Length: 323
Image (cartoon, one colour):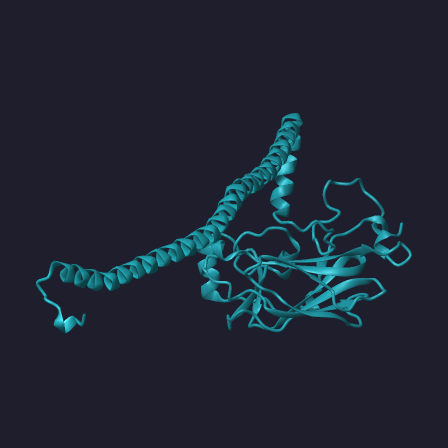
């Protein structure tokens, strides 16, 4: 029977219409649920994949950290122990040296202590080389009378070939009042170990020279200049210290001059030893120190001490050693 000719109030017809309308809805709901479950399964699978990829890397990092951290701490501790062990060994060595020195001092007699103190006062520096420009060589301890030819005399100044001494009236009166000694020191003061402030030889201007007759003929190797430090300078300045200078060697004074080197003295280093630049195979009996500039004082330049080092010539070349 066609749907148009049906009676809508007929119960059979109503049940057929309801069944006809609910079928598509059920299919639609079923498809929606199926899609939702599929999406959930896909998301769960993706989440499980991410979890499986992330957890092993985290575990590896944790394992690495759990292993490396104690190893690093152990290495740092070993380094600290090694460092402190070295410090302890150095300290132990210093203590042993100090104990040895104390034992030596206890074993010394009063005379030995006094002699050692005097020697330290005379030296006052680290130069441990014979000084053939020392004025007092051969004078201490006293010797019995000997023939003149066998006496080893100290170094002297050749005054004829040495610059004039600076002598200023106002400066002389000032120094005489302050230091209670003669202001104008002679050139041979540079051959003595006394480094008291003001105990120097001053010459006029910034150019001058001094010629030293050595105690004996020497194969020259080094020359040492010494000046007082700025901390004890009464003027608070080092502008009178020598700067550029040249060294000449002579077999005797006067005599032929042989160039041995040109140097510069730095007053911040109070003691400076200069190796000669032009080594000679012959021995010299005299040395000339020619100063060409100072560190800024236009009136005078001060020399405190000059030392000459080398090796002694054999007696055949050294009249001072012949008997």
